[in-house]
Amino acid sequence: MILTITLNPAVDISYKLDNLSLNTVNRIEDVSKTVGGKGLNVARVLHQLGENVAASGFLGGSLGEFIRSRLATIGIQDFFVSISGETRNCIAVIHEGKQTEILESGPVITASEAALFLEKFTEYASQVNIVTLSGSLPKGLPTDFYVDLVRISNEYDAKVLLDSNGALLTALVASEHKPYLIKPNEEELADLLGQKSVDEVQIIEALESALFAEIPWVVVTLGADGAIVKHKKTLYRAKAPEIEAINPVGSGDSVIAGFAAGIARGLADEALIKFGLSMGVLNALEEQTGHINAENVEWAVDQMSVNRIKR
Image: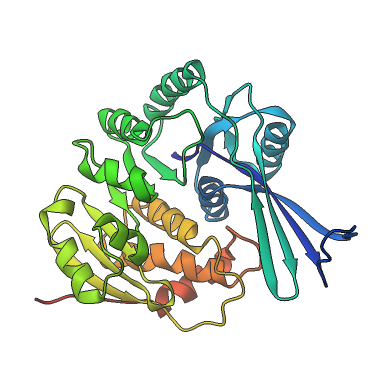
C-alpha cells in the first residue's frame, strides 16, 4: 500500500465568470468544489493508476467532512486524523483570462493533535511500503515535523518520497533521516543552494555534491523541458514530448504519484524515470488538477526520452 500525506488539505473552490466587478455583487453560475492539497492530488492519480492507496493528514469541521465524503466516493482509503480546527478553503476566481486566488491559512494544530498524528502515523507506517509527503505544514507544527515522519518511516522500511520546499526541504536534506526520493523543481533547488537561479551545469554539479549523496533519488523537474535525475551516483537527462498543455497545475504531484507507483511495481532507473515523469505530461493534458487518463500511459512512456549524462 502507498500512503499519501497532506497535512494542510483544503476544499478547492473555483469560480468562473466573464468579468470580475469590484465593490459590488458578482453572481456566479459556474462553480466547482473539489478535494484539494498536493498529497490528495497524488492519491487521486495513484487511484487512477489502480494502486492501493490511502490518504492521511488533518481534517476538521464541515469542510473536513466534505473531504472525507469525497474520498469515500472516489474509493481512496481515509487515514485522516480529526482535529478541533476547521479545514481551509482555497478559492480561485477565474476571470478575463486571469486567475485571482484567495487562500486561507488553515487550522492551528495543537500539541495533542500533533502527538496523536505521530502515534497514528507510526501505526500506518508499519502497514505500508511507500509514503509520500507533499506540501506545507499547518500552523502549530514545527519545521522538523517532516523529519519525524521520515524517521518513523525509515524505522519500518517504508520509502519516503518528498515534494516540499523552503525550510521543510532544507531541514530534511540536512537531517540524518533521509527520504528515498525528493523532487525539487529548478527554483526550489536554487533556493536550497542559496542561489537566485541555476542552469543545467549547476544542477548537475549540485547533484554530484555531498549534499545529496545519501538520498538515493533526486528528481529536478524542469517543466516542459523534462528533468535531470540522480539515482545513487548515476545522472540522467529526461526530455518530455511536446504537448499542448491544457492545465499543468498538479503535474508535479502527478510525477510523485508516478514515481510511487513505479517503485511499487519494481521499475528500475530508465523505466522508472519514464513512468514517473509521464504522469506529469498526462496531468497537463487534462482540465482537472491531479487527474490522468490511464489509457494514455503507454503512449506517454513511449514518448519520454531518458539518457545517461556522461561526464
